[in-house]
Length: 221
Figure (tube, rainbow, N blue to C red):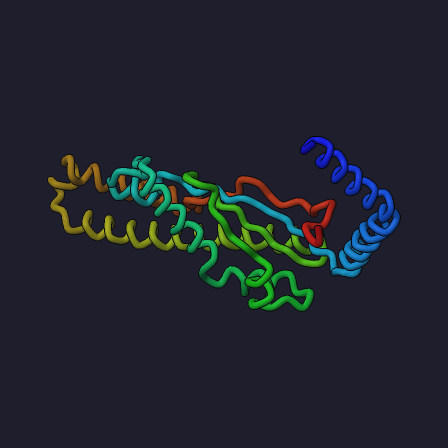
């Protein structure tokens, strides 16, 4: 008896579905069409991304005789990642980018279009820019990344110059005998290394990959 009742109920449900199938199909078509029309009216936005690679063993630490970033525990790596992200976000990079590209860009518009994110426990930081133009998005990202690297190189250059001046002063305070001794030789080697690094304009961050204009919008989906 229960089986007959279940079969009867199932037949009633199927009957209702068959009766209202055209209406149900029409509702699905209308909703899908409305969603498609809404998405088509939305402004398309394009996201381009570039990546920076931070050195885990900064030259400034090597020259100072300090151990490099060899610690690889999770907390240290995450802290370094957060510091790298904040460094990329900060400074005058956004303002410089806007000034170089023009196109009505301002520091605020660049800041609003750019996002910066770390890549887990790695020295890689990804810079992304989202605008209504795929070409402009790529140009903003590449200019931003390039200016940040140059700013870091400038900071390192000043550090090397200051360090070299200190070493030269220490050398000048040594006696003739001390200058040819172990201390004097070590200081002279340090001064030469700093001079070389000043000429090379090295930094602790480099562009790992440049952005290409995206071929499809990132929104709306």
